[in-house]
Each structure stands twice: as structure tokens, then as C-alpha cells.
Image (cartoon, rainbow, N blue to C red; front, side, top):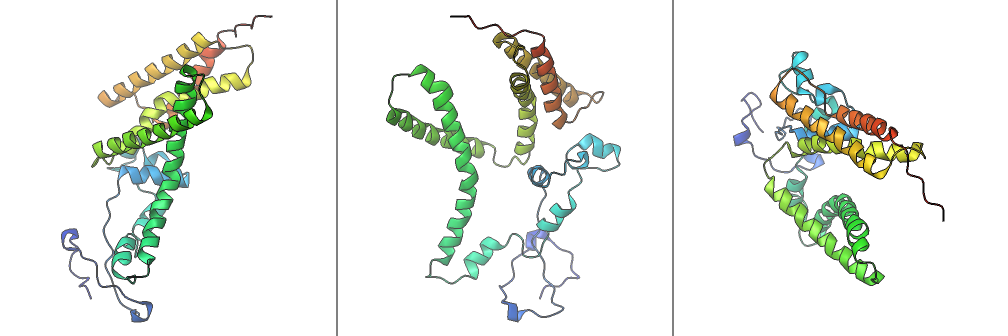
Length: 262
């Protein structure tokens, strides 16, 4: 039984021996493993919960409210600090019986759950490469040929993602930075999409490209200014809104080129 009066030192923390339910008694106390809350955890819980209050992602807002750092979601702290949270691999290795394949089934289930999200991303990358880049160049080919190219593209995309992941090992701000950078371009994409859906006589190819580029360049400048100075600050979730509005308005300024009558 650990001495709960002694200050907790993460460096000395060790998992205790496994207990069955009948071994537990009222009044027993156990340490739970410590965890460091990273920005990736903040961002993931923000997406899962839909709680987009700036106190969870906007450091400047937190400072104005008197907080030194980002404030974690209440339920995020609760689930990360739950007794037994994070010891599942330890339980698999030490408590499950050997020789029955149970350990292998649980590990396979964990990998299957992770692949269910990764496979869709790899499939989308492969489909985009074949449909938008390869097929317009190589037109006279069979479906079997395109299928083979799609499989090669899937493998190539997986290799690229693995290399990128290895290159960013130890960077706990990668997910947060990725959200910021995609916010710079998603506004332009959404603005052109809305232009095509809501109008039939506005927007043309050249102007649409310009309408996407100008807001993106402006937002990149805004991002750099915010990183260098404290005079102007716009939280990154608003960048998509700004980019969408500017792209849509620029696209409305031009008329769609009429199709020639045959």
C-alpha cells in the first residue's frame, strides 16, 4: 500500500500489482499514473466535445482573463485523471492469461480501431491523386491500370505520412500548428464552393483563383504580424470565416463566361 502522505514523484512512480475485484476493500487508496496535458489533447477534445470557447485555445484571451496558460476542459481533466486510465497496455501484459490468444486479439482490436481512421485518409489521398492528377494525363488506360496506380499511391502516401510523423517526434504542437495552417486555405476553398452553389452567373476561372489567393496571402501576413507584434490579434478559427467571406465577395465581382452555343 503506497504512503499517500508522501509527496508524489513521477520519477519514482511504478505500477502496483494487479488486483481482482474480490481483493479490493473499502478504504484502500492507490496512486494513478500522472499525465502531461499537451496542446494536441486540447485540440482533440475541443473537436470531440464541440466546446470552442477561446479559453481552451486562445493564449492571448487567457492572459486577458488572468490565466497563465490555456485552461483545460473539465471533462478532459476528469477522463485523463480517471482511476485506471492509461493502464490498459499494462493490464494486457500482466493480467491476461497466456496461451489463449486473448492478448493478441486485444492488441489487434486496438490496431483495427486506429486503422479505421487512417485507411479513409489514405484512400482519399490515393483517389485524389488518380482522379485529379494521373487520369487527366494518362487517359487511354484500363480500369485495372488505374487500380494498380491507386494501390501504389496508397502505399506512397502511407510512406510519406510515416516519414512526416517520425520527423515530428517530440513536437506536441504539431496538431495545433496544422489547424492554423489549414485555416489559411480552407476559407478560399469554402468561398469558391459557396460561389458555385449559390450563383450561376458569377465567378470565372481566373478570377476564382485570384479570389482564393488574395485572402490566403492576406491571412498569412496577418499570422506573421500576430507572431511578431501584439497590436492585432484574431484567433485562428476566425481565419476560415474571413477567408470564405473575402473569396466569395471577390468572386461575385466577375460574371461567368457564357458557354458558346453550338
